[in-house]
Structures are given as C-alpha cells and as structure tokens.
Image (cartoon, rainbow, N blue to C red; front, top):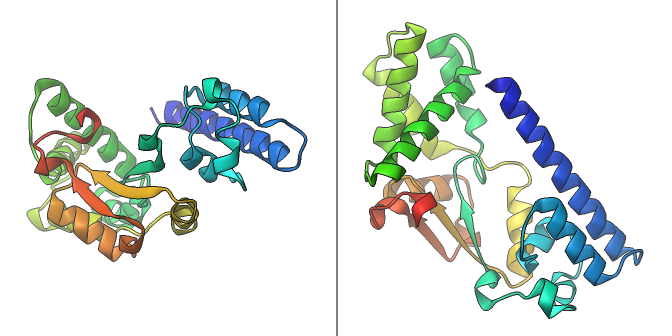
Length: 227
C-alpha cells in the first residue's frame, strides 16, 4: 500500500511540475495563453483552468491568462471562490508522527491510521452516516491498534485526537493562500472535523486571516466529499 501511495504521489508531483513548466513558458513569452491553458488542462485532467489554479501554479497574470479563449477557459463567477480542504492539504499530519512512534513503535503507522480513517469515512459517506470526524478518527485508531497488537489507552488515543487541533500548516501554505487572496480569490476552508475542532485548527495554524469562512461538514450533517 505504501509503495502504491508513493507511486501515486510521484505521479501527482510530476503532473504538477509539468503544469508549472507550461505556466513558466507562458510567463516568459514562449507559449500563447490558449496553448498554455489547453496544455495545463490536459496535464492535470481538468475541464476549467481557473485563476485560482493558475495562481497556485505560479502564473504572474492569472486573470488575463484565464480569459483569452472563452470556449477553452470560461471562468464562472463561482470559480473566484476557492474552497480548501484542511487536513493533509493545508495542515501537516506529519506533526503527529512522534505520538505514533511512541505509541505504536513506528511513525509510519500514522499513514496506516489515515488510510483506515479514509476507509471508515468513505463508508459513512456511502451509507449516509453522519458520524463526526473525532469518532471516525478514534475508531480508526482502535482498529489499527487491534491489528498491531497494541494496547491503546484512552489517554493515548485522546492525545492523538487532541494533536489534530494543533497541526502546523505545510511550509508553502501561507504564501500560496496570500497569493490567491491578493489575486482577488475569495477563500473558505471546509473540513470533516467538528466545527469546534475546525476553528481551533485554523486558529492554531495561524490561517484565520486568509479565510472568509471556516466550514464544517458536521454543521450540515454531511461529510465533506458529499457536500
């Protein structure tokens, strides 16, 4: 599973690198806007190349670049709103590795836990469940501990769940959010965490100033991917 994830991550990084190269060629005048937009869309597999996407790829003039060819780069008003996932997109779950190493003996168990969490989360999504993020995360911890033969205490489980509130942002996050905001993109954060946890995460990570709203799936009783 880890090797498969590594391959997928490498493929995603390669796609992003190629897309950034196309944007750089456009900025340097070596490619027309239409060519850049069509090429970036094919590389990333997206139908609409929005200003927000161009900013994230380093485009120096996303508004101009996104409107040359309406049939290929039509940007609806809704595309000027960027809704960001929180856990592992904005925030770095790797900060939990010391706790996982102490409790389970290996920091890599954190990845196993997150995969188990996603399995439970998708089950809730498909079955229409509304179990909150904390319960799903705690249940995933218990399942991993049972498989690994680890005696997981309530205190250890709670320490990991509490640590989710204190996750730091990935190094590039603040700069990227600032560029999106400066380009006129309205920002919101959306997470499956409970609203109280979501607010704590954004505040503790120092990201509150970038977002107009912090939204929790539990407030609408539906998990994130189904909203």
